[in-house]
Image (cartoon, rainbow, N blue to C red; front, top):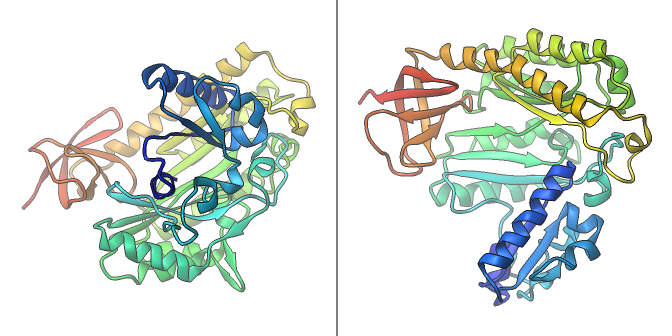
Length: 377
């Protein structure tokens, strides 16, 4: 979007890309706009993203907002007054790692989610386009590609699924590794699991949108997997890649959730031992079926979210401590810190590195969930 704005002569514009996944995310978007209007009076603020698409008039009324661009049109050159050919590749720039968006939209109907409304049906970029974007990222010095999407596991092109795309990217010369963002446990292709066993370049990290540990809650969310399926998938990938770092998304305090059902999510954490845990306190989204279900008191939702985070903390610390003494291949995205193959943060204790540098460091200590390492020459 920044590239398109510049091509359209709007280099001074402030772009706010809003999120609608929770009420808190929407509130943060409004706060960002008000702060920008105060800090940069007179500069045009352009608002886009999911929240802006759901209620454009409300966002247009905020101070300093010059335009609201629908989410579906935010990557169109015409939206920014840019020439028709000024379409940047679907990959981030200015970072040590390349975030490559290969999928948008969703065809499912989870009862808590407005993303399907805001982003439309599932659609994927072509394999050849993704490979070309990754090749351009490598040419700019980005050695890791992170594949992203609203429903990444649903990526399809004809008879090819996500495993075919990953395999094509791993064949590119100069690419250190490919990392996958959050995956739906119901849609992970079996060949992808085999890739974790066969390809060192596929990062040993798996983040599952598990959402809950209770089967009835998952049905009320209209999810397509059961807790047993999520556990079996995680164990299968761990068997293929024993050094795997697992991540989980969980929703706390979904409507009608009982104490026993909340305990099932705690139990899921204990079984799967995630290195990374993203807990979302349930937030009613207008227009969704869950918003019409009997809600829990907000204080109880916050309490249960805190309990899930507390249950996950020992496992995050254990995952970091398990790396003590090991050699880690680190991609530095700041002068002092980088990310390991597993996705853990590592801070260099022996001086700064150039951003984008790749180096093997030995883990000498752990501070919380952050590794401390030294170069080995």
